[in-house]
Image 1 (cartoon, helix red, strand yellow):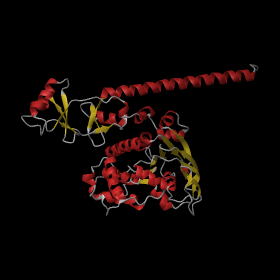
Image 2: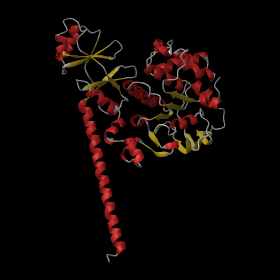
Image 3: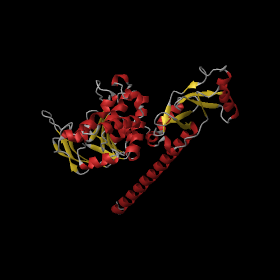
Image 4: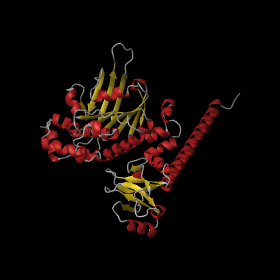
Amino acid sequence: MPETETEAVRVADGGAASGASIQLENLTKSYPGNPNPAVENVSMDIRAGETVVFVGPSGCGKSTTLKMINRLIEPTSGRIRIDDEDVTDIDPVKLRRKIGYAIQSSGLFPHMTVADNIALVPKMVGWSKARVKDRVEEMLDLVGLDPREFHGRYPRQLSGGQQQRVGVARALAADPPVLLMDEPFGAVDPITRDHLQDELIRLQHELHKTIVFVTHDFDEAIKLGDRIAVLRERSHIAQFDTPEAILTNPTDDFVSGFVGAGAALKRLNLTRVRDVGIADFPTVTVEDPLQTIFNKLRNGPHNELLMLDRRNRPYKWLRRGDLMRARGSLARAGQLVHDTVTRDATLHDALEAVLTDSGGRVAVTGRRGEFIGVVDMKTLMDNVQELLEADRLTAMEHQHELEEQRVHRTEQEMEGGGGGV
């Protein structure tokens, strides 16, 4: 049975738990033999349903702070409140069952199947077999993995990206209001990492959990965070604000060092593909007759088509010249689609994909890889131009404010000095 009456009602209704607020109050962690605490007097309010990213140099205490929230590391002093409930003194095992936790390299149990890994916490909290079975399939579908294909596999049979997806599914399986993520995408290649970040953004749009995410990558923090906490040594907060505010107005040189050069270009990580123009594009499928494909290409406004596979996923770009050389077969004709982006990808991701594609466009796909449309170079560059223009105007306004302040100070100095010698 579920642990509480509230949980019982929620599960019975089939509803999903939304996020919970988190308050850290003077949180400190000291270790014997070390004169300085690893984390010192950290206070922070995290709103329900938002994604907060901890970013800072190695050894600054960001992972220690994260682990104190679910008490994998016990705080030396201070309080942790989740939805106004003080969790510092309750059973840490019960607490962890109500908080999802995802780590680098997924942390899956190698001797258990994918289904058993995902089912672990729901079984522990007393869900029925039928409910657990349905939840496993629901979670695999949620993270874009076909339940029929992946249910019985073992972690060693999965790619790194697939393992991380299963890790996120396991963390969310018991429908916790809070999800803690400790550099979960740090061990995968850059392309897979981009796709996993997009997947997390999509999931958050659907689930509205409270996510606390640790990374050392400032670009990842910009892409994922509703707010970013830039941490110094001992998790002292240098700045806690929105990505836009940190990019445009870093509080000091330490924060500026994280922002680095090209703050305007980093803002490309704040705009999603779904916010710009996704255009239609003529498509055919691998099952269409060659003559049908030829007629569509010859009679259409484009000199190119996108061929989709049997699952409606982008497969090949076909040009008119490719069909002339096809000689009755498309097996070797066309250019394979090497990269796609999702609607939750950033303009930065889309621009990278477009720049590496000879056709100057990239296919946009849904959660199962199905084709949605394309984004082209012109659309992206128009948006880049708008960002740069907005930054130019902001810089001019800032310069004007500084000039007014300088004039005001000069006038005050002259009045104070009385103009005498």
